[in-house]
Length: 329
Ligand code: ATP
Ligand code: FE2
Image 1 (cartoon, rainbow, N blue to C red):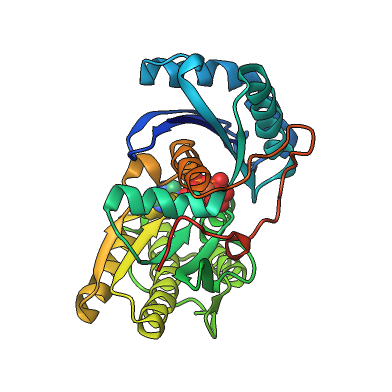
Image 2: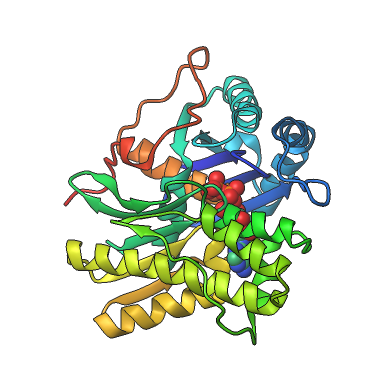
């Protein structure tokens, strides 16, 4: 059974195809790029997604060497995300499901980031650090759900880095630029904000911006921004490991591409005798292969297909609201 899936929660419009054995046959995408100095403009992103949808789907079918007649299930990223972007994906998916008369499955985007990580790194039961633009969550599977042990109280770590990058007039994409500038930097001190198991980043970004305007070097500020925020994340992951007694850590989401964050978590895991795994670069940022694979897991474990007329977007759908029927412990 092949699942063709649509991703459209934010910048990226993607089409992925997966089979029932966990083979990813296609992972096509096209990403909206905001104007220099701007963040995402949701209506522009929606227009982008609508414009490229047909082309990206053709590309995915070509990558897989398949036609629409071979597809058994349509899945789409139902939330969380920006409503205009989600509508682009919903409308395209509903139209497709009607035209090829195949069931439509709604997938939670955050859970898909975890499932593609588990699939590609062969981890069974990790504590997951899911770090992307909008999301920052420390998650572990307990009692039939992916429970959130800690999360950001304001912006996601990716958006925090992007916000600083824009203020500092770096080039897009900001995360990798900050990573480059941080090399060779020295510690100048920034606030460290962990509240229980939760985190807060926006005050640190403001402070980092101030340091820059007070004449500290770009390299030192980028270094301190990474060291501070990544140490905060590592601390919370370590406590989740100790609390749950799990032995594996999985790093997933767009910010998983950062080698300093990988290094810090790796060191912490070594010291605790836990195994550490990072999702491969191709699947760290938003992609539809992860939606296709999660669509397979959900439909195999009895998820009800959505009726085309009633299908809706779920912009605030939380990780811990999903019944994860495909894992039994
Ligand atoms: P979500 O809906 O899951 O929040 P998203 O739209 O933010 O997803 P992702 O592609 O998962 O998208 O993540 C994008 C984020 O990853 C951006 O904020 C970007 O700056 C960040 N990022 C990418 N590469 C790096 C890197 N090397 N270091 C730090 N951050 C990075
Ligand atoms: Fe994402």
